[in-house]
Length: 401
Image (tube, rainbow, N blue to C red; front, side, top):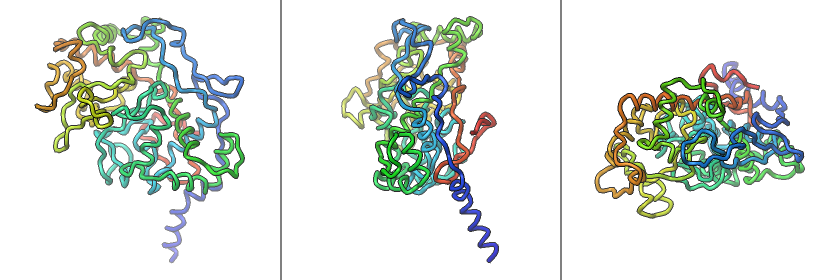
């Protein structure tokens, strides 16, 4: 009997700890955001002072607008929600399970694992594998099209997709709002973040707004490349500079799709990605809008922190950056299944880059200069539900509040 009582106590301990801890919301805007007179957070960057034409691979190119204008409290509330498994139907899966800070806000898997899965990253098992990989969330606040197939036009729309997908977090709008409203801590925090009475019920619209506010703070613009772009000639070595010239050069033209300084795009592109064995060929954006030119089209992913987000492509077809470069260095369409009738987008620019092995090595070296996690938010020690929070996977996350 004592053993059974002890086991029950251990099971209830996380909730008991959380219920006795009054969580607070930060009142200061995240790094790289300034507080306006109206109490909103506004993004500030040197890139906003530049005026070069975008799309040409130049160094001092302005950024597209960032989705800012939230309050510090809304962003911090979104952080708690992002790490809280209460958002899933089985109370096992949080947003951070598929977008872990230590894995470049991806999950390190070829394709993610949805409802019923256990663990994080490579240790995640059980549950059904999903069709596509979890894309990195770095700099998503700058994008106007989200998901691999580009079906979402806002961060709010993107956030609600996994929450209500039967294959992913499998929640419903009514159950999600009810479970959060039943939590006294969340009622208090939502009232603070949205400046309304605590007695008001929590809405799905507020949940999406808080998640969007948090995801807008995931900014990565302080890499060695950025130091070089802002005028430090010593920030890159000779090989990396050669790689940058390959990246933006007339032969490879990587910068035409992965546009600096985001090294991303809201566009979709058909590159002739190889198929995944034993699965139907993924038609990408054509599954949303049935048009021949969109067959096999996927949103151009960011190259920011690309060294942290292997494997690559929409279903993890390539394990290394070297394999990705080799794919693009081969004749266009070489990996696509015969008879798919794909309109490869790069055919307008080039037939076959034919980069030398030295060029390819230089290009990979340059891509690794895009790493920067200096503004990575801390994983909270506890969330309002009291459920377990995903643990840090490396020693890099030693900044928990």
